[in-house]
Image (tube, rainbow, N blue to C red):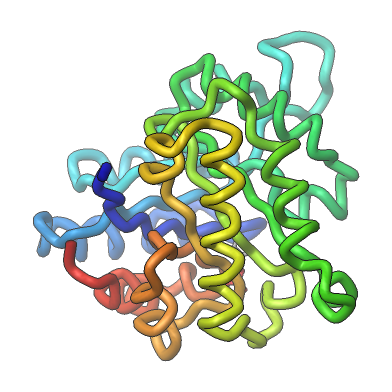
Length: 255
Ligand SMILES: O=C(CO)COP(=O)(O)O
């Protein structure tokens, strides 16, 4: 089976003016350099405006750089948008797509996320495709069904373990301090892998990393990262403090 190296990804969201972003990037890069062989990949996804600055700070540290969304078109009349080519040109290897905050605040649909992921793949970017149910959907027993539908529709057919990562982020757990129970997380992740196998074949499904996101902290990371189908974390709040982000990464089981 393809080895799934844990990925610890920080989604900085709309946080980080240049001085703070540089400082945080230097701290994370220094921690990584101090332990280059640690068995996990580290990724930071700052806002567009500081990609360049962060890119310089993490050069040669082994920390990967990602953006938080991209447009489906390569270029053109799309005021305020950023294309996948621009993301790649800024030094990024990854891009987060379909985060629930984008789905809610910018009405992004599964079809759009699918097209964005294709655009990202065309630029050799790794698409981190986010899915997750709302509190109402979980309470009505629909979590598995909703997430399965999002995966089926948002993940393009050209996806492989080389160009795609899935992030399961229950909407009600994001920034709330509420965390899904380990049993629930494992159940959803295993079901995502099943849907991926139906869509892309077992080999790709076995290799695609599925991250958990939603109030992941140093205190709960170990238990979540130990689950069989959890291959890392997509971390919001706790990724803004280098020591917390590093502590979460250190909680990865060794491979
Ligand atoms: O949305 C998230 C990462 O993309 C999770 O955010 P928090 O870790 O702040 O809950």
